[in-house]
Length: 186
Length: 99
View: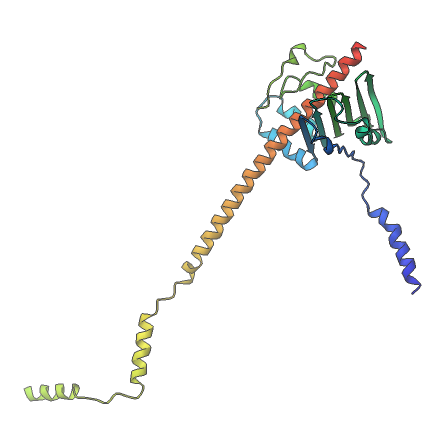
């Protein structure tokens, strides 16, 4: 009989060890989709990104290999973009849970732009001297955009893809000025 | 000579009482003649094998097609996601430079 409480305590102590520690940011915001005029909701986990690289392997565009290499280093891409017909369709508090997660340990604010009527915050996480995560939270009166990329993202590689696959130029040093032209996805 | 032949014929064609199991043997023989011949084992397995192979081919074809569809959808979504990410970074960068 005395063994039961001890066993229960042992089990209770082991439960937290069984729960996987998820460092992944949960974007949420699905409640905004119903109010939005237009919405983009993309969530690609590692298995979907693997499928994406399979598609790019078959693509004969010159920079498909570069894009494939860029995506191969990623673990998760989440993009949620909501455009509203009028102002006041969302509250600042709606974005707070995402901001809180992107302010957690390991993350830092790369850029914070706060102006009248809107704000853009760019967060990054580093590991081994390179960006291991990128978060963008943009809040405008009629638009909300949240981008969360987990994995080794090379901004220079992303910049090199400018002008292809519809990816615009980032304007990084050394990038060709004529690469601002964009092409559609083939 | 002719009498001998006649006697032999008479003897051969004379009435005989059938044995007791004659009727049973006739019925058994008639039944065995009517029943269809059992197919050879080799051909008996042919149609199931063909149908299994055809089903497997259809399933393989559908799964390959579905995977191709999933790959394309994931690829296009990844490109769109990176496009939006790049756009937002570009806008933020330009705003920061203009401030």
